[in-house]
Length: 329
Image 1 (tube, rainbow, N blue to C red):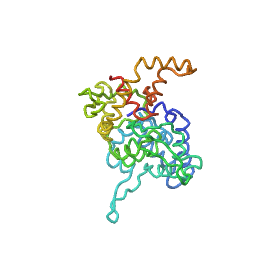
Image 2: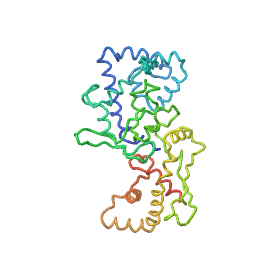
Image 3: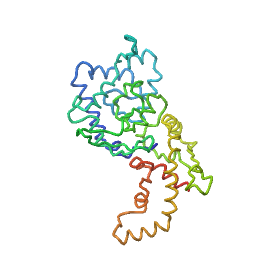
Image 4: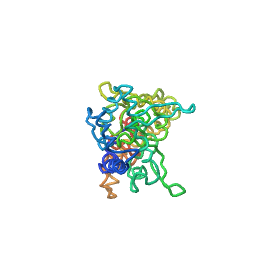
């Protein structure tokens, strides 16, 4: 799991502003299903105690504020929750949810539609195109990108995951920092689990929270990858530890990473080749070939095909794993 706080998606305030303005303007222009005056009346009633008074402040709430909102909602009475999100009822033996006053799931559905329901200049495709997050923030294993399909339409290898599931917290269904471009595997495994998950939008050095480690039981690890033992260690003193552990458990990350022993073996083999002497000689060659714009970290990144700065892990798969193993050995 990695932070995306330094990505353009997270760092460009205009993306959040555009997203928020589109939602707010849509509700101002519609007088029935989503009337902004009615919405903000309910927002003030239930969320003013945590500093949320308007639809704008709800949609652009920070990752930390989203946690406050979730915790506040969890402590409301059953009747208050029913007013906000609605209730489930059986109609012709089918479970149907009656929409509550702050159930914004339909707004989210408009956002992911490939049309101009919200705005002709903004929907989920626009946000996908602006994203520079190329790996899943949860697993740092799978690529996340968009492409033009055979019909000329935009397709994605990722889903918009809700850190706090929209089915349980529909008032957060369209909040910008509740949306994470997640690989389809993680999104499916995480599902509607209601644990205290880590929000990848939070600015944190993940190296201070957890580390990958390996033990090698036999010198023949090159041919016998079973001798490579994998460990995942968490810092005892970091206050985000439990959030990370809950997320790892939900997406089965420990079990998934252990299946990549071939990658771990290749990291160990490369380490033998790309030793300090090799890097020194390469640095001299680069200088001779006018590659002076590359520093040592950039050369390492080119050789290994990953990022070694925790602020950039989200750009390439297995960056966190590779970085940790190299530190470990």
